[in-house]
Amino acid sequence: MKNSMALIIAAALLLLATASIAYSEEEAWKGVDETVVEKYADEHGRSAAGSLVNVEGDALLFAFLMAGVAGGFVLGYFYRDVVKRKPEEKEIKNGARKGVHAG
Image (cartoon, rainbow, N blue to C red):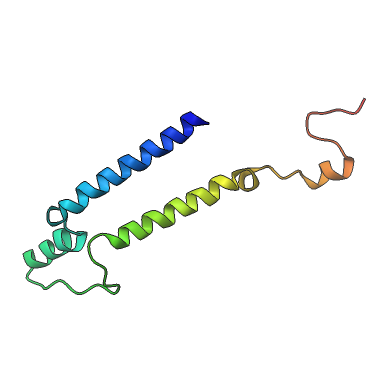
């Protein structure tokens, strides 16, 4: 119990440390729209169109990441219900399971 709590605290501290470093170097990390879309739009002589959802930086990517984490948690929590083999109707009527013979 103590080991798992120490591991959780260490992971949280590591996450906070990396977030603070990324925040301090904010100018060095531009969003996908600025680095990719505008570059190719300028190369082809067109102006980059504004996005439908106006967010700064990679907030939209972070939202998709969180949605994936939530979906993975739900799938992991209900894994057995999702992949469990349903007994066939014939087996239910006979009261027997496959591979088990009444003798």
